[in-house]
Image 1 (cartoon, rainbow over the protein chains, first blue to last red):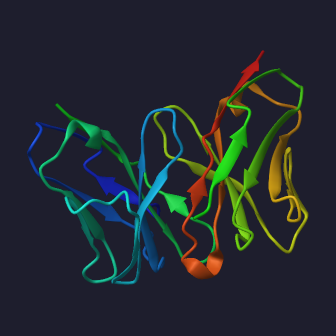
Image 2: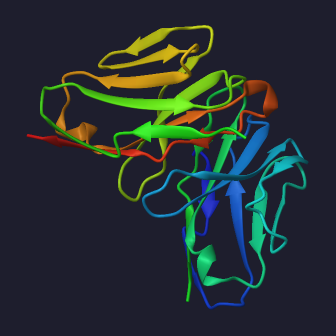
Length: 111
Length: 113
């Protein structure tokens, strides 16, 4: 599979629990992005990496959120002490030049 | 930061008619403008993009126009088909600033057979 993949596809958790999502970008893509999408809205930028360096974080990314891309390949997004407002689709995307390719997303439901 | 406005929020057209979606952006430094199609429960898929040094680009039934002076760009779909029904998002970015995309609010297009 040469596309962007994400795992898990769905996650249901209780408020206060920690969750971690994984993204595997297209192998030759050096940039990796995380977006969040709520129902009926466009994706909102959270953070991006160029290779292993995290170059920008949105103010939407509170201190409960952390993202890593340790070897410049796959990335993880962790949310600590989840809140109901964190319920959303978390989309990973990657690019080499201008074309940004999205993964299928991880749908998070916080009960 | 960049702000992208998209209109209309919903659009219903008869099969075979044309559909036009309009977006405006606020940051004059933006120089890359992609359009994504998102079907229910699926990922956003890039359908066409345009760079700021080009005024118009066409790919089969889809075309995009850009007016840098007015800071607006539009998506045109001709000869619409039922499979064009989806939510369409415009976006803007600055390529040199990591190509971080700022999306519009989306347009739900319904093509009636």
